[in-house]
Length: 293
Ligand SMILES: Nc1nc2c(ncn2[C@@H]2O[C@H](COP(=O)(O)OP(=O)(O)OP(=O)(O)O)[C@@H](O)[C@H]2O)c(=O)[nH]1
Ligand SMILES: [Mg+2]
Image 1 (tube, rainbow, N blue to C red):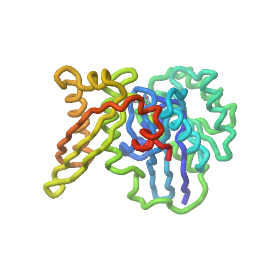
Image 2: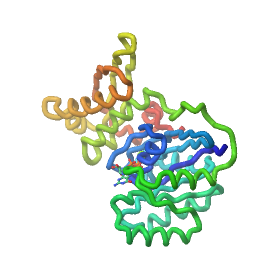
Image 3: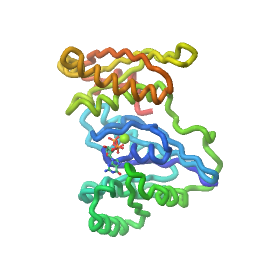
């Protein structure tokens, strides 16, 4: 039996969360086309007859512009320090820059094996893929081209990881797929819909808190009340939209996914409130759960 923790590391938007969800076969981590979607470490567990891999999704590496960003960067680096293997995910479809290489090289100094996944091969010319595989091959680590979105070559990637993991017992019961609660996922699903709907700074300045999460009617119904915290009064106005149209649209998208996720009817109430510059306020970050633990 092989088992161990694998840190999933890479620049923002590389496809780390998509990859973890594909490994686990369920959505444990939200995904969006915008960088800095994942803010905390989230575990997704893959269990088979002869292995158990605990993938730890991390916030993307990105220049820190706020205290929240610095905490996120620290979370990624700390996770890489405390695992059995580092899976570095690189969005390879436009070719790797010198900056990409420099960042990747930082992780080669780790004491644990490193595997490089070249992601997004579904939108990549084959000639570029061949040259990237050659270039990164020179680092002496396993390089596996994949498409997380199209689930291409993932078995090969899992096999490569498995071979490098230590022998050991299961870390978790086999039915465990994540370390995160339903409550956490509810907040994240709403944040994902906000990331999909709104542009620029707005989604990055939003945090979601679950105030109420209560099953009723013998589990057939769930009452959820959420607070959407934003940074500025004008952001609040945009989030609400004309006659409430914007918040109504995101709430409907969130509710539909929550109904699938919780497998019951969902009654969702959302409040929007302003907490000026919460992203730079250590106390607010702690209260929102973004304290990097
Ligand atoms: N074409 C293509 N798109 C992909 C692939 N994997 C992920 N994406 C897309 O890339 C975007 C970012 O994906 P995420 O999984 O959120 O990326 P991430 O690395 O977790 O990003 P952060 O959490 O911000 O660090 C989303 O729009 C995904 O659908 C892939 O294999 N092919
Ligand atoms: Mg992510």
